Image (cartoon, rainbow, N blue to C red; front, side):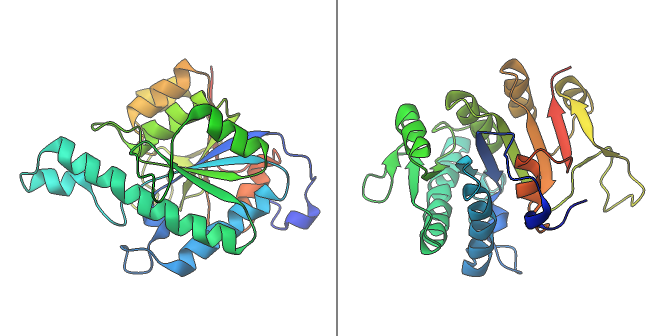
Length: 247
């Protein structure tokens, strides 16, 4: 595995990507809240790929600030809990925007839940135009509807903006047949089809997201976002993580 961006070929194989980030990616060691250090680390990883000329959209979650299922378990209405989560994604988006812009990367936050004082409404053609102008677009607010995860939002937005791939940013170096934390000898897939991902009921993304990607032939690369250079290696076409694609 190549660990230095300087030794890699510099021609990306993907023109436009959607990065799916969990809210937990923004959290510090405690696992909750927004950690400016983590936001800065994410921004550096994104800038590395942006500097290669790749058009980037980021769909971000909110698990570091709010988990709707916890509210539901406490008796909260599902729609209310989900809308609260959508609002929380905007907070994460604003924090990441600040980190990127401090590195000189022009960034726009768009959201399906309108908050005109702090972010643009999500408009597909406007998002595409921003990316064509070299801006990173952070897409918050999920799908704008309850009962859908931000994984599904990433699949939907990727199809809408005609992305070439979804990069699922995790802390694991791909998809395993079993949880590698439980079974250190678990098999890691280098490549897997959408049908296999659905049949195995893999939990790296929800089934709705996998199905939407399969219906739109939208490939997914699952990788360890925190491995130095992993994101750049992926967009440059080097085998890293797990590739999920058509039959």
